[in-house]
Length: 505
Image 1 (tube, rainbow, N blue to C red):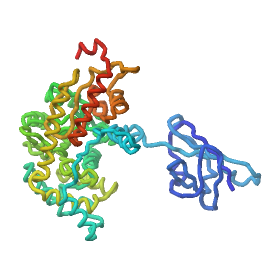
Image 2: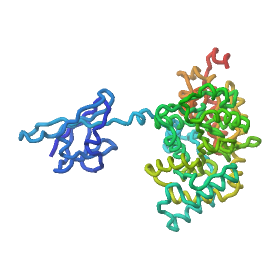
Image 3: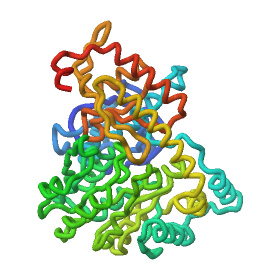
Image 4: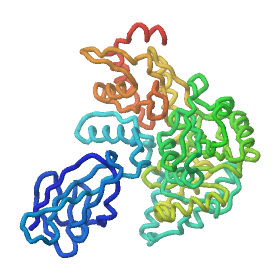
């Protein structure tokens, strides 16, 4: 038997490869002394949820620490090679370092809040969850039936990496008919959700030293995807008074020879703002003067839009098809978030690059989901009557919520024209004293207050690049939304705003 003692020390590098990282179910590795079985070939230990095996020849080799002070090292005590003395040991250090780009990534705050609210709900606490960006409607029955049919008829094998030809042709037809965009099937890449489509587009075109321009407020994952590619996110704040839309003069100020990518999301997550045609034309005129500049057009909310607002695809503008990476999917309009299905439409040169990334990361999207996606596209123009009914319900909820929020003292709001979010400015309550003790200093603390005292889950705006605001999803029943507003109103009555904040608001 082998006595093993280990400790975690500070530092960060890469000895796991030298230790032949693998998986095993034998033995335990803890911060206190334990026992394990050492075979001639390997010794398997597990740390918490991680497991790895150490080959015997490596156990006797001391690994030098690189990048001292930047890594986490496990020090393990193992028998000395062959001195014949029982109890003699040599020290083995295991490198627990991460890729610096990965280590620097931020976790999604929307998912954190949503998961916390779900845990509270499951424990019996009556929390109203308005954090996640997910329709509360059921997936259309025809879509569900198509998925069931696929599973029952053995359509459960790998598909081509880019997606089935049938689905890609249907996407081409949809883009032509609804968006005025002409693509061939080999210019379409079907992925496991629009999030993957965006990430692969960024990885395909961005390099270290490049800059990606991201108007704020932004979807939480844009900056992290850019950072992971090695490029630098350049955040451009927009104003509530401008409906949080990027203005041409703001774009001009940040453009330079390093500018590689511009993100445009319309309708917007988190604001619900929609770019008018003239706004997009002004931006396109600037983009056209910069040969290196490409555009990611995130159009995942295109069907959830409220008249008189209209959706316009950026790639349809003169000269923009060649430099636009259009992303869309099925999650929002068709209430298919769990089916994980999205797509990228782009010139073949860029599409091939993204396709290669997907081939090495995940391969093709789920075959069953692809069959369901085909059924979704066959529901009719813009999703047909099924989607129209969802949008009608979303609009009624939006109108009700806007009216109630505008009636709240100190709350400012831009009326969303699409998606299913409100992004009100609650900054007049920052610094407020809580009845019974305590202070609310920022959006994070205000959301914490609403969750703990009012049992309403919202997302702080700093996750989206605007720390004055909170994101409220109205993808919930009318009854839940009315109760949530009532709780928020009662909660605000427990806050006493400081005089300077009140006067400045």
